Length: 119
View 1 (cartoon, helix red, strand yellow):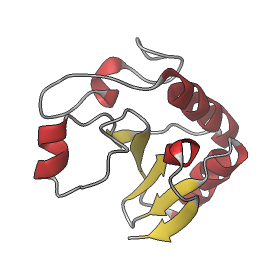
View 2 (tube, one colour):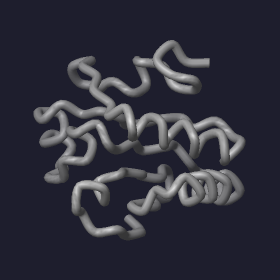
View 3 (cartoon, helix red, strand yellow):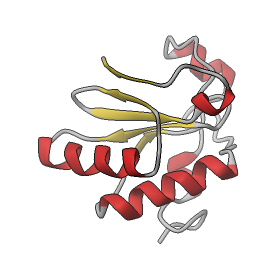
């Protein structure tokens, strides 16, 4: 059990550059539902990003900066299936799949297009 939420602690969701943390409460609630539905741990490799760190990693998107995105570690097909099933059942409609992580965000609720993509 995390110290910040049911499954996640502050440290894993905070910016790895500056340590600041902002996660949209509705996003966190949806993420916890996805984790419950998936039935496996979600290891967060990137949560909130301060604007400086977001720029440093080459992102122009505001999804992590707004506290409405995470990247979940995933390197095996069986885990990928469970994580994706949980995210889709929790109605995440923006999901990116990389060979080492799965990106999930809720920017669709702010008018961004709903989509699934591969990195």
